[in-house]
Image 1 (cartoon, rainbow, N blue to C red):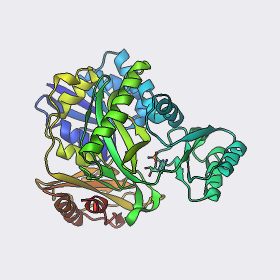
Image 2: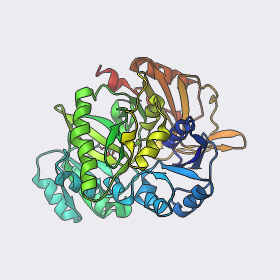
Image 3: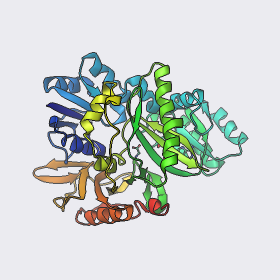
Image 4: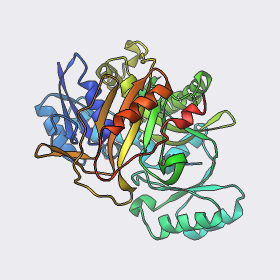
Amino acid sequence: MVNILVVGSGGREHALSWKLSQSSKVDKVFTAPGNGGTKNNVPIPVENIKELADFASKNQCFTVVGPEAPLANGIVDYFESKNLGIFGPSKNGAQLESSKIWAKQFMKRNNIPTAKFEIFDNPKEASSYVESVDHPIVVKADGLAAGKGVIVCNGKDEAFSAIDTILVKKTFGDAGNKIIIEERIDGIEASYIALSDGNVAVPMASSQDHKRIYDDDKGPNTGGMGAYSPTPIIDESMAKKIQTDIIDKTIHAMKKEGNIFRGFLYAGIMIKNKEPFVLEYNVRMGDPECQPITMRMDFDLYDYLHAASAGDLNSLPTPSWKKQSAVCIVLASQGYPESYPKGEEISGLDADDNNSYVFHAGTNFVNGKILTNGGRVLGVTALGDSLKNAIGNAYSATEKISWPHKYCRKDIGKKGLAYL
Ligand code: AMP
Ligand code: GLY
């Protein structure tokens, strides 16, 4: 039996802890720092790599890292230097997410399909470039900016103002020392996540996120307002194409370049005219995609994460998935992704049934009460025999839960239904 330490505090980490605790090989699952829904919380922040390693060593844990920041800070390299078992990519592997410029150049030299781009650190040169092109534009800060460093522009004025925001006003700090200006691809977006041991990559189930705050994809980008799995947008032949032309190519090229990638590799895909393009890489599970994906797993997640970290995925059978659909509705606090109230008591949380589960994100447990403690508060996730049923089950589970400033989108999954 092994203990697990899950690093992180979001809905993704609650889902990972939940699934890992079902393994017959797993004894106790700790989460650091965790949230109001995770059990055995350990009050160590994700930045504090040394303390996390001490805890893992003392409690004989295999560690599973949820978010990108500790990966980019080298948590895996540090743990491995201490001979501690850990799942996730090294600091070099995490560059696929931590530097968008590094990722774009990597894709270019390895012929991985992505939007064409130029790199700038000088605002004047960036603006002249915008003047000179005749296609729509996206401006991206190079570094990690909590999902906010991408500005999709309508027209040149918006592009000039995006350049000003990132390079001159430094709204994203040093993450915006350099920018990418790339061609906007207008297509359909989906998430493709695979699990790699550095040599091979096995696909996880396909999914689709809903990034904007309001229905019909209106309003500003968020961390994600809901997701479902599988998505009909990625059919069998598209999945094959993404796996071969993007995922396998990425894993092999990373190995060839000396950056063996072990972990979840998430490609944010835009499909246009039946061709997939990589918008971005993430080096971790998506949040909220992780919630419906884990609910559909019909395998022991610990076995696979452990084998991936040992470079030994080939020793396991292809992972099997529940045939059902799963839908996660994010319940947020009104005002997110800008400012929102915290500390409101949540009621109606005891209504889990066999088909649904409430994953916590921005919550904490204080004096016997669950209080809101973040923008994205809960991920209500349900299975159903069809996408339509899963949507119905998930929304009916959300109705039992309330707090004064609860907000959710009402159209999660609708994009998938339109595609069936
Ligand atoms: P990211 O924060 O990197 O996930 O990007 C945020 C969102 O910007 C993506 O989910 C896409 O919706 C959009 N986006 C990024 N790059 C492009 C592009 N080249 N064309 C169109 N939309 C894009
Ligand atoms: N749901 C998008 C992300 O995890 O980045």
